Length: 503
Image: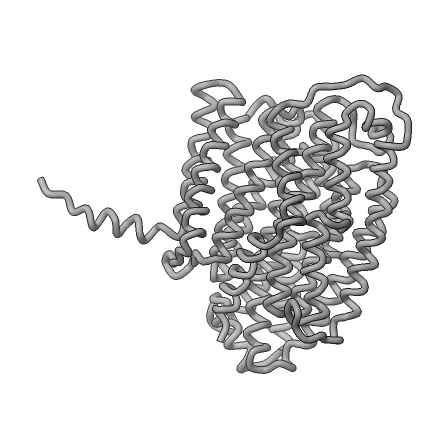
């Protein structure tokens, strides 16, 4: 019997661009069965970690060797999508490590919980590879629906129940606005392909219907990244959800929203700018104002917070404002800085939430009062939290400083060592002022840990998986600060892959 091996290889070649995502989906399907067979949560968590490692190893291999390709003309694998898939895989790896030993995650429905995590991650990866408004929308919903369920899985907690209800209602509203915008764009342009829509806008110009479509889509996807004034859900959800879920949402879901903005609005307006520069200026100022207001509201409101999870939620809102600078500037260097900032944010914000998860697991709590005297009880954890908070504030030589330098400089210069531009200098100034404001509320946590006296100096044990997650995050923060070259190289290639789509 002769078997045509070439036909089998052709099948694998055709699905290669989405193979890392398919591995995650297949793994998600097996999670409930693994839990049913072994009846041990740690075995299920370990299996989920193995699935993520296999998917990440394959993706890293494809990214390192510069593989490109497309699947069904709807999904494209290139330097941008490969790098962002790697980011999402790092996010879920950290979240699984913490969830595997966390007392906040439910002891029931363990298989379903890890299946939801992997499905949501595959949705993020679909967004990273998508080239069409409909496939982007499907990817976003693959993240949103499992996220609603994961927030609600924290049983017998009124805060989680309230957060889940708010999340579902506001998430449903954002999906409705998005679908409305997509339908209007399709009605106007006759296509859902992003480059096709850009060609239409370039030729037809702005109309009332087009402005409404863009406004509803900005509002709909603005909910996903908690842009002001679409941010009200984030503090309640991050506080009410189990901390491993908060880690996943703050570091993964938010980055997925930024990727959506890059795929749609950055590509759309850079395409138009390349031929009709003056046509994009109005939208650039819209994004600039959204960026300035979001970073300011996030930082100012964070000052008043006494719950650390809630404070980190408002900090995440401010970080979204920083990353919106790229959509005002619309340059390759701004996009490079944003991608770099996304990676730095995963490590520093994810690491801060890991420390919060450890302290909640130890029964210490999540308010500033609970952090008093922590340096005496857990010197290493306090030192790690200090590094994460300093990085978030932009203190050198940590990754947060380097990321802010690259991102903020994009509003002043066209490239490193390039010509100075005055148009967006005010936006860089607002970002720098806001970064200084953030140091105040981060310093409050540091003061509670190192200066104020706690009620006890009793030591406590830290689960090994949680400590591994914290160490991985701090290594990322330090390496991105003192050795940014390799990270910047891949971020530059990812930005160039996006720009190569344009005429």
